[in-house]
Length: 267
Image 1 (cartoon, rainbow, N blue to C red):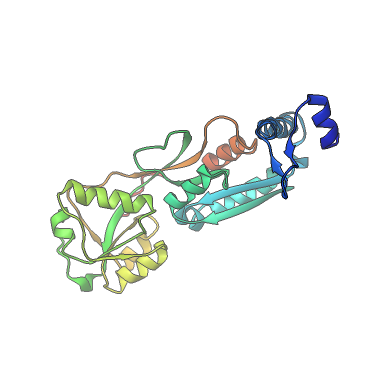
Image 2 (cartoon, rainbow, N blue to C red):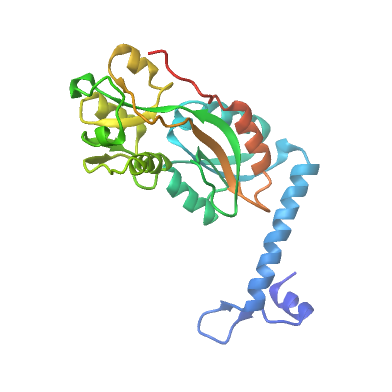
């Protein structure tokens, strides 16, 4: 049905054509919301009733760096096996920035650490927990005794940017100890942080299981702290309510292929 015919059928004006440029009227915006609902419902019908291998569309996924470096290839393979015609768009980044894109509707789902709180309007499914710890180079000369926040902030601290959930966890730990680090190097890359720490440029906060080879080789050393920081929850996060019909099955695939658990290195 053409737009003019639809306007006549409904008895309303959808586009304001009285100005030099055409604008959508308030009634037009109302109709657009219904159209989006209809399009989503049609997509859900295709997903729930049709053959998954004939489904098409685009799935936009935000992914934390640690997931990208570990089990993301297995997840993408499973998605392509289940939905061969679906295009997968991946964005690797810091958690806070990806949450903003999720809220803006620019991502469909985010796989990331979610700390202790979840923003209103969002739902999360657990992907497991990862134990992070402080590490540095032996050359820095940090004591083998457990470091309090007051002890730790005497050293340069290498951390993710302010948009990172891990940065917030680190800052909260220091704040609970009544201090804040003043010598900070920020990095948006976990791997870069590890390299900087191994070079003796500061203390950083990394997933211990992933860097266990570096610890065993002596490239990095554990910095014990008191109080300890609990294992960090990773989750698949997506908006509550109606969403892209791929989200629920993709969340299930992510839960199946996640390799995360509370692993602590043997060194």
